[in-house]
Image (cartoon, rainbow, N blue to C red; front, side, top):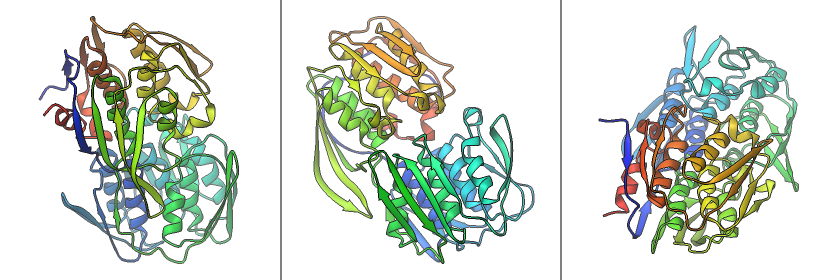
Length: 438
């Protein structure tokens, strides 16, 4: 099968209902939490992407028994301190920063050296940011160039710490929470606002965590857990995966779409707030609570008059994985859109701020990058007639999917390489695209 996706035509109008794959962040966290439980945990709608499979394989190497099927995944937890493994263990986090960083917190009490590696893209990302606080717990961590590969060995008596997370990294915050659950005493985290899936799961499981929410930061107190109860979970749909179809529908002519059972956690819906301000027609239908998360169906329809935006920086962390497709909306909006303080975007699987600008330039849209900020000079009449080739982007799944959405929305003849990159987060992405055309 060719690893090249060729698109020559815009998508035709549609009126559809779709189900999107399970939330990647929740899928990985469910695997990690369930490995620590006292009993059997079952998940439905688990996302079987490369990132989640890497998490499953990682805990298997730590002595956890797992049963997988199309309908469900069953994990036999080994307890809070029950990991068993051989010497010279190597854990491959593949492309997953979530797995690579979070599992380090779980290994705070590891008795032997464990090596963590990743693919070419993940091996370029910063791991010093999590090595630093874990060392304060007492872990021994060796890494070169502040990135993977690294070696970690825990301690018999981890020390509680005070940690200031000032980047808005849910991965670093979550890793420290995992370490704190294995540490006697009180660990205190002052964390810039970011995804709170780990905290919500801790609360649902009745773990010793207290959270005080302030305007820009959260204060989190965690004490050692005695045990973790089983976690049976029906994983809701991923807002980051849904974002591609929300934007495609907004940019397409005479189209409507209902996406079922999406996780609209308040720390994840920055894209919804941003797009609404830009004139995209979006509604939440049938909102309900599920294990502390908020689930809803999302209805979106074609948007003819799109407005530019001076995007407030406080929305950045809640839309960090969706900015590439947000930039496509800005490309068709009237006026100049301005996105600021997006340094974190260049620390993802590829330098996404640079790639976002590059794709828009190929489409004929003028942009300007200055100090981790991006100006986009929109064109409401944008139609593409030229040929565009997307390649050498470190196989970043979101670059691939954004390019597909751009091709289907604006036309032109696109050749987009490394189609298999979608296996990282959304293996059924192209199948869902085809569903819209049936």
